[in-house]
Structure formats: structure tokens, C-alpha cells
Length: 269
Ligand SMILES: [Zn+2]
Image 1: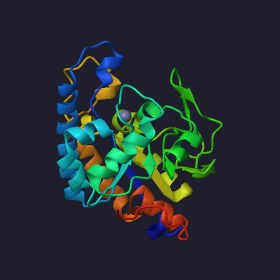
Image 2: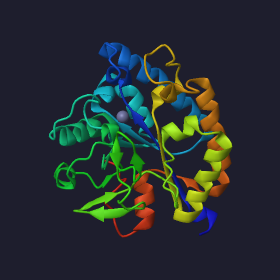
Image 3: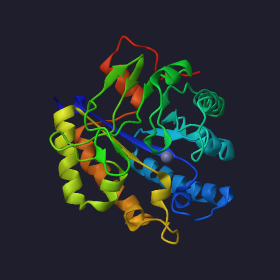
Image 4: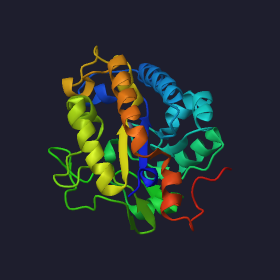
């Protein structure tokens, strides 16, 4: 496949920073939001400097708190749903978050990523108005999930297009946020290029809060390694390395490129 036909999907899960709650630390919502916003500001600057298009899977809760930021980002980036709240979920939040994000961004919202990659019924996603989902990490994460038997590449199921996040072709080594911060950058770069060449696209995801200093919080070392400016630099370097290898586009642009006949995605309200 020619370099110019390859697609690079970078996405950020834009959310209240609630990871410390998982590890028994109390944290007010206001502080969770503050950390999330600090990270988003750092990401916004990085996106402006690198001039790439991405997809921001945003909780409606976060967008309600910072509607101006989300509306501004929606001018260049795709907004997807990361449900309503990061820490609690009801099926009805699929629809209500999508509608809230459409109202705030002024754009159609057709993509979903579930917090913590929780698996929900495709029929529920379809009923809530989604076209695609990217909540599948097709690998085995001990203690979290085992999706080793699921397809590694884009597939359709019950009316929803699933865009799994990238894992390497042979051993299904995940290329998600934890690998990005914990692997040596040279190794991560090699695995990302290998996967991009094999699949014709890359689907990599991060969280804005990783790009701010979260060292003071009681979360495992592997979740905060290189956090803050060091991680901004690391992602900046990766983006520049990948630029000659493919086009940075949103999920909806990627899906209409794959299937030009479908006009369901990416249109303006
Ligand atoms: Zn999340």
C-alpha cells in the first residue's frame, strides 16, 4: 500500500481524571475536571503545533464543564462519545451523551469509545444512533480482558462498524497508551511502523491527563511514567516520525475513505 493511502488515527479519551478512585484515593469531581482540562490544554497546543486531525472521545460530563473548549476543538477534530460519566454507566447514557455532545459541538457525533473499554451490546449502540465503535483492544490484558480471538482489523457486527485499537500483527502486542509510555520509544516506533505497513492504518489512543504532571496521585508507576511535558515531547516526536508514513485523519474520514458510498459519517449539523 502506498504511504499516502495509509491512515493514522490518533484519538484522545477526553475525561475527568478518575483513575485514583480505582486505587482507593478520594478525589473531588472539581479536581478530576481540573486535571483533565490541564491535560487537554497541553494536547490542544500539541495538536496546533503538529497540525494533525484527530478524534476526541469526550465524556458529556467533561464537555458540559468546558463547552467552549470542545466546540473549538470540534472545528478541526472529530468529537466522539466517551459516554456521560467516566465512573458510572447506564445504557441510556449512550444516547444522552451523544445528543449532549452534538448540542455542544454543533457536529454529528457517530462514534463511541467506552470508558475502560467496557463491552456493551452493539444493538444498544445502534439504537442510540452510533455508526462506529472503537472499544475493542484485540489482545489479552491479564486481569482486564481477553480479546485474543477477536478480529484485529475493522469489521462490522450487528450494524456497527468496529475499529479495534492497534495491536501488532504477529503477537498482538498492544500499541495503546501504556505501551507508548513504558516501551523504549525506538521499540514502540518499530512496532507502530510494522503494524501500519501490515494493516494500512494505525489506531492509537491516549488521555489528555497523561500530558500533565500526575506524579502526586496514588496510581501505579506504569500509569504515570514520563507524564507531563516529557510525554508531550514523546508524542510530538512520534507524530513527526509517522507524518511521512500516512495521513492523520479522523475516524469518520477513515471510514468514508474505506467505503466512499457511505455518507453517514462526518457531516456537519
Ligand atoms: Zn476513559
